[in-house]
Image 1: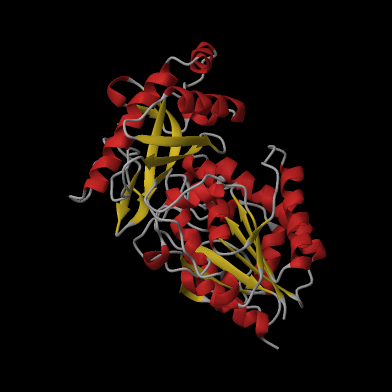
Image 2: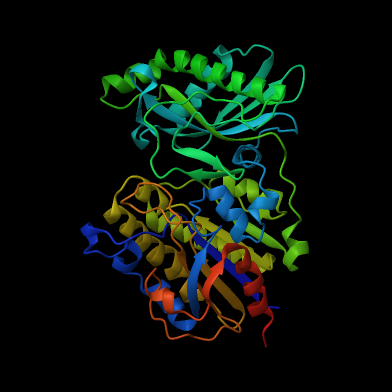
Length: 424
């Protein structure tokens, strides 16, 4: 059977932008290698979770790997903890976190500290929190992961906790049990509240609020933040929490679902956590160094190396999402062009389309005009193996509307890809 190369461009979907002549970044970008794949295959659009849902990455990635998030999702926190290498058991509480900058009365100045927090700074601030913050009736571990991101795991000493609580991060909320981006985030750190009358939820909310206040006290007076203020940088003086979990993820192995032994290349903890929960082998890769030629070439070479050992490789490239959140369409365009040149330039050069099926899509749209995830469908292409060309010449939101794949659901992608793998 042929092999599968499944590539996801995080947040690449977008909307027409006046800075780009009313084109989207995918339309505006020069991307000859990706467009060549579009010309060789079939295209379409994907609602990665469902119409009207602006999904977070964890919900979307579960869906596009074939797991119905309404059935399998247990909250992002557990997946982040798993991907970050933290211990986590049923009845504990895990939350995805951001280092943030807040001002008076808990007003949020920047949810991500201006994206200037270094790994060393984040690790030192996390160490201080773990050493200096004490919770009543509970223990915790807080770990910084990448950039401004972190994970919090709380263990109650005298019983279980419930994740049926609200976020302190006002940019996200729960809808039908899933974490989704709000159309307009709030301006202040919000109080964590229980969403039911259970003592487990009440205690969980109390502990999150206690952690939030005590962590702010430690962070605000920390020397690192004093130095950041002196240098004119935003201090990392608060922790925003969201997407709580109190259960470990239990996914049917992807090898049983689709008959494929798969590997994953991803740098973010949540994608690694999903891959681990799905029984994929996580291929270790170094963090992005900020040098596109080196970063993406390494990922392309690692993907090909993994294809020799596995039936399929899932590659998650974070690049386009951050400039979408920052409202920077030119930088988002540049990210797409870098991926095309340095990742797909290597892929196309060595690709045997007779024996490899390539799937390319995005987990969600992050329009620069919104600076947040949206419910827009995203483009998809499948090329190689038994896939015939559908006459679409480019990979973007508008061009792929007319593709042979039509408009599909995220949960359908893997099944369609596997059919193409088996076509004579």
